[in-house]
Amino acid sequence: MLGQAGILSRYDYLSTKYGMRLYDFCARSVDSGGIFWADINNKAIAAISSNGVVNYGEVVNVQNIINNKIE
Image (cartoon, rainbow, N blue to C red; front, side):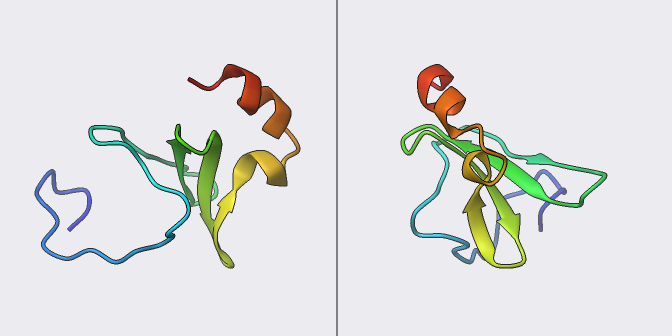
């Protein structure tokens, strides 16, 4: 169960392209209800949308900034 600070008893893949490093965290937007996370290896800010997982940097046209700043 998410939000209970416990270990996941079950997991499903949202994406095989975008992921997270061990000990990284994601953020949930209260306004939009979306979940966002940084994928350092792919230099992307990923988000869950109705179409699956998308690169949010490309959606809002800031991917060039992310490419230069994300480490």
